[in-house]
Image (cartoon, rainbow, N blue to C red; front, side, top):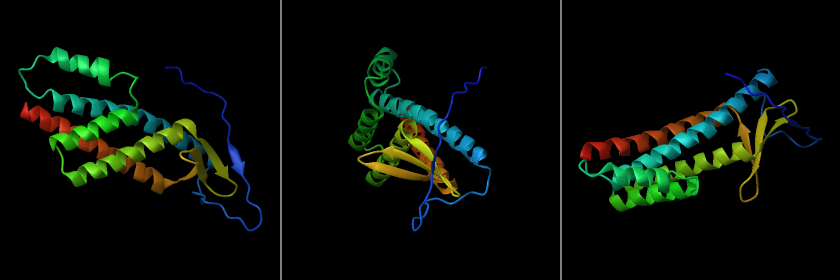
Amino acid sequence: MKELRFPKELTVLFHLEGSRPKTTSSGAQGLDDLATIEKNGAELIMVTVLLESRMIEAVSRLLFRKADEVHKPREFFVAEIMGTSDFSFAFKRRVFTRLLEHTGALEARVIKELKADLNKVMNWRNAFAHGRVLHEQDAGYLLQYYSGGPQDLVLDDAFFEKVESTVRNCLYVCNGIIQAAQREA
């Protein structure tokens, strides 16, 4: 399979006297860190697509529960309504969480946590899709993006561990809803 290789831009931030970097160096080679950051960003974007498809599946399972129900309406709903690019991730997330509230499929506390986690995933995905990675001289990496104003994310192990646990939690909840709906059918 052909591997794409395009030119890259990396901005280096220098700090003047009295200012301090927001990040610390991992001690690893800079190019290795940058390659990992790029790979993690791509992984996050791809898993967001997976998460979106799991939300669509969960919504369709909650709306079309009966096993004897004709599958054509469900397939149409998934392919022509929820699965289109006309609806954003934010819209699908809102439909999903409102349906969870309406059906009582999850406790209110769990829905609140899920909403917060889905918002984080969406914000991180947007940051990687539209932001830019900066290297602080003699320090680590930042992701600079705009979300209601200029934002900076420190890209370190702690951040990526938080991303991983948040995404896994969202997938776990979505898959649990799908499995429960299948058992009830």
